[in-house]
Image 1 (cartoon, rainbow, N blue to C red):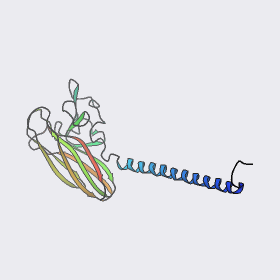
Image 2: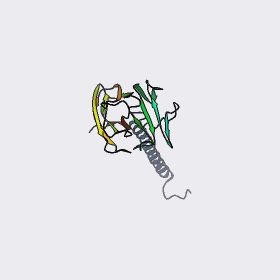
Image 3: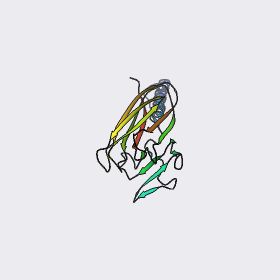
Image 4: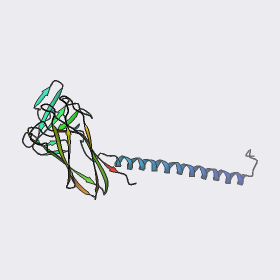
Length: 219
């Protein structure tokens, strides 16, 4: 005797049924795991940074020898009219810029960028985008070593440009303003450019940090 209260063929069928249900449940769990992994991968790709080195943290002051140091802080001047031509993924296409560590209080990380080194500078990088809506945001302030005037930057993407200005109110570490621009773009490769357009000056320019471009989800 098998110790069962049912006929052997009935027990066999019920055993097969339970096995099929277990297999089905296992397949379902596997599908959930696979779908979860695929979803996580898609989310990771969607959240990848579109602007590289937007906080200027990928480069250290001193990579070109450094121009000036102030205790634990430093300033590195980069550009066609000085030395070198890149700050991480950014190309310095005109004038020069100062990579600043510690001398100004950066709102993110330890570095920020003065967009005017020994002369008004321009930085740019190419970005490949899918069709859709995008939001560009960045923080701006100004080099307040000399004065408390208004600093201005011209931002362009897809041939459209806008100018943002900030007015310094006191010497020392100034406040940072947030600038936001919205775009509707076709698929393609675009040049994102920041140009110091502060009037009447050659150095002590507008300062930048935390440059981000994010895709805006469809409603």
